[in-house]
Image (spheres, rainbow, N blue to C red):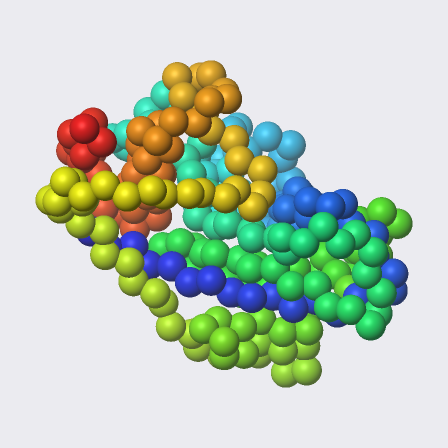
Amino acid sequence: MRVNYQSFEFVLKPQENIILPAYKGSTFRGGFGNVFRRIVCALKKNDCKDCLLKEKCIYSYVFETPPPAETKVMKKYTAAPHPFIIEPPVDRKRAYTPNDVIKFNLVLVGRALEYLPYFIYTFNELGGIGIGKGRGKYLLEKVSADSKRIYSSETKVIDPFSKITCAIPFEAICDDCSRKSLLTLEFLTPTRVVRNADLVLDLEFDILIRQLLRRIALLAYFHEGHDTSSIDFKGIIE
């Protein structure tokens, strides 16, 4: 099984003072969602669930991600894993001036790679509206992939970029599970894990790995078209 993705670095140049919270992920995600919907939503409905265009709408696919009617998995759920991840700056700096830059990463998975221009345009528009306390404005200065600039505020042209292909051999994950070693995980951003509709407070190893494997499989299913319904997650964990 193969999953295509790419990580893009966005560089923002404040045009005035910007005040952000210590954790900036919610600010970028919320601002992006509001502007993205305003740009691409055709019918301007308040609820995507009742929209006639929801299965063909870019906003619905990216930000709401409802499982299609013919899905084999997550039939009882209203939303599948989204095909994008915003990785905010991990520092806790809050005040930015025009002498600073703000960097964050955007990861797109599978079919969402086709919609990179929408992400760039949306974050560019968000800069004119402003973010944070007082709505400080910024300029989207450039976007890079694999350390290569693919967009700049000067040209406003998106250059071609390569995809990263990740091969995931689920059937061979535990071919050799006899070796034991110590693994330490450091969570850099807030993490929320739900199991059986309950919030997990004591995150044990098997729960974490099960959730990670399931998330990868769902991304492959919904955004790459792979049939993952037969994967034996329990067998892999055990």
